[in-house]
Length: 366
Image (cartoon, rainbow, N blue to C red):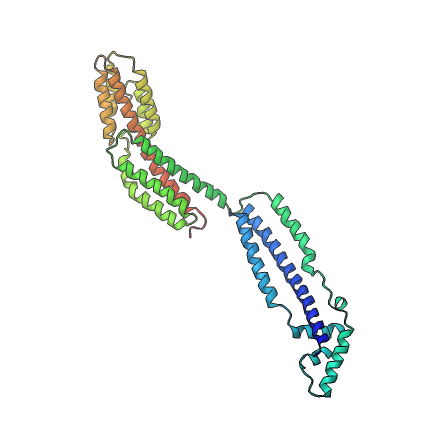
């Protein structure tokens, strides 16, 4: 095969390579633009993820796949010879000479010369034009759709995942705040063992929930472990008031307000009422026998809260003495602190139960 024929085949192959590269790149760029639209839709309307990093990763993946695809479909010399024969109507004149390296007789010599003669008149620019394939024609439209989606597509929560994530985060914040409240409520009674262990467990629980998302099963197991461990202990620690549905007043409206709040398990309001009573009594040095009897009666109805009962009984004794207002105020303050601790313990049980229930409703638990 002559030099002229080899030069024409190599030139034709380069043009076919360009054509194939443009076709493959146009197709993959269209696919990449479509994937970008889907990513933007997923980010805006379905669930949260790092759009820029994910887009770069998808672009790199498509680039690698496009290069591999183009390499697999690169035209060989044999394919180029067949393409030239077909495009220029040479009736396999180049293909006949392609397998002849050195003519061995006059017939092969004639075939090679005929191929050389045919190669002289070939216009590769006209016969093998390099045009943009169809993928490149629709690419601007896809890019316009991509830009429109990026700038105009509104945010939505079609699957409810963002609301569920916000609820989970709120529950985690509740757990952390609860741990802080429990620690503050227990400062006046450092010898207790329940609260420090619960505080440490709640803090570890919040850390594990943030670290393991979205491993819902692992998060739920940790919530259940903490809940089951402290549920019985918390139920025992929070007193159930021993009141009848209808009870008689103690004779002091201030203590009655505390009793009503305690009966409703509103320990925070009961604590505030006692603290207000302590402030009111600071400058009253005269004995308060009616208030003392009311405190004593209330103490007998307390139930399981032994420290609260002791504080009220001590306040009742101090209120019967002359000039013991400050001591009575200290007893009321201690009782108010005990009620705050009971409120924190009650909230611990409710928070753990709410956290477990919210995680059970989380999509993807299975």
